[in-house]
Every structure is written in C-alpha cells, then in structure tokens.
Amino acid sequence: MKYTMGSPPPHRLLLLLLAVAAVLHRSAAAAEGVIRLPSGRACAAPADPAAYDRPVIGIVSHPGDGAGGRVSNGTAASYIAASYVKFVESAGARVVPLIYNEPEERLLEKLSLVNGVLFTGGWVKSGPYFETIKKVFQYVLDKNDAGIPFPLFAQCLGFELVTMIVSKVYVSTVQANKYPITCTQWHPEKAIFEFGKQMIPHSEEAVQVTQNFANYFISQARKSQNRPPADKVLDNLIYNYSPTFIGKKSKSFDVVYIFS
Image 1: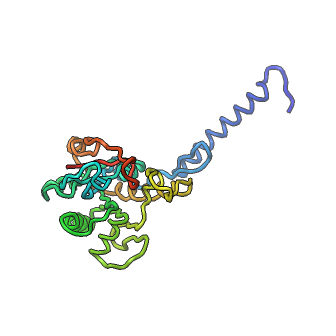
Image 2 (image 1 turned 90 degrees about the vertical axis):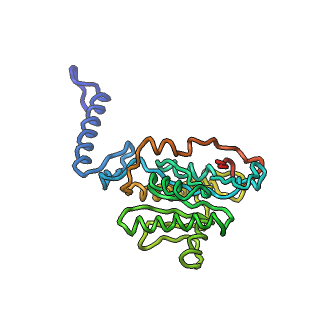
C-alpha cells in the first residue's frame, strides 16, 4: 500500500476499516434479530418477550440436618443442601425454602410465590415428608393442567418419590411428555458445588452438564405466569436463613441450610 503525506498512517487506516466493518456487522446482526458476541458467536434475541426474568424456585427441605444428627438432632429439624440453592442461582433464579413440616396453609402460601419446584436427594420415603411431596407434586400437575407453566425438577430421592407416585419404573433420567417435569436419579448439582467425595467429577465437561441442566430448568420457570409481590418474595427467600458449614462432619454436603 502506498502511503502519502496527509493520508492516515496504515495502522490507523486499518483500525478505521475495522470500525466500519464492525458497524456494518452489527447492523446486519440487528436485521437478523440476533446479538453478536465479541467472539463472533450469535446469541439469539429473546424468543418470548413475556418471559419472566426474576423466577423463584421452591425447594422442599428434607428431614434431618444433612450430617446424620451431628449438627442438629432435633426431631423437627430439616435441611436443604446449599448446592441445590447455588444450582438454581447459577441459572439466574432465587430460592424460597418449602419446609416440609410447616402447616399446609403456609406451604400453599409459599407455593403461590414461586415459579417452579425442586425435589432434592435424601433417604426418607414415607411419613409426613412423603405426604408433603405428594401434595406439592399434585400442585405441579394442577397448575399445568390449568394451562399455567410450572416446572418440577426431581433429583435422586426426589426422582424415586415421583416414580413411587406415578409408575415404579426405574431409569436414570426422565422427562414427562405432558408436563414440564424432569427427573434424574443422579446429582447434577454436585459436579460444581460438592467436594466431599472423590468420586464426584469436577471436570469442565461435568460442570457444563450441571450448568446445562440448571439453565434448562430455569428456562422452564421463566415461562411461568406467576408474578408474586416483591415484598412477599423477599420475606420468604432462603437468604433469611444462615448457611452452616458441615464439610468436616459430613461427606455428603459441604454447606446446608437447617430449619427447626
């Protein structure tokens, strides 16, 4: 390229050309209805402008303290592992704890504030806990039957309880045909947030699997038509409780929320 006095230096000319190209590229992308990331990859514009960007997920607490009675041996105690909370948060949602042994009217009040539900892992398959699971599961079905999107993600024990309610057929991962219900016999949340056992994979691929499951679940919750009052949500969020580190006493969880 020939350079003459009065013309911009070659490097500045190149920068000018790149800037013009970027503007043209953005204009073309806007016409396509996509957002171009710096890497050049396309991020589709929101498909549903009515999607709810402040979803809240109810997580049902499990009897005990998550550490075999070594933290709290109260008979009314229940817990939610913090990994489930962070699993939901990682996809852009917040959590309201559904404490399994609270009065039914309180449970229903909390359900009216959320856009989906998560059943955790654990070991209890009978008694008041199972009865609460059945009530929440029926609530999920009723909402969807009424045309109101309301997803459920059930993991491990949660998966087993759902199969006890509907079939008894065992597989590792299922998705309902009619309802936004996904169940896994395994724990996708542990790959990112639990380090107590060597068998838990923490590879980049395992982390991506976890994130994909979280993103999918919360994408279903964003379809919810529920718009709960902000002050009611704040009053019931799990942030009103303090997490407890139990990693030295339990290999199952690093951190839990305990309710008693």
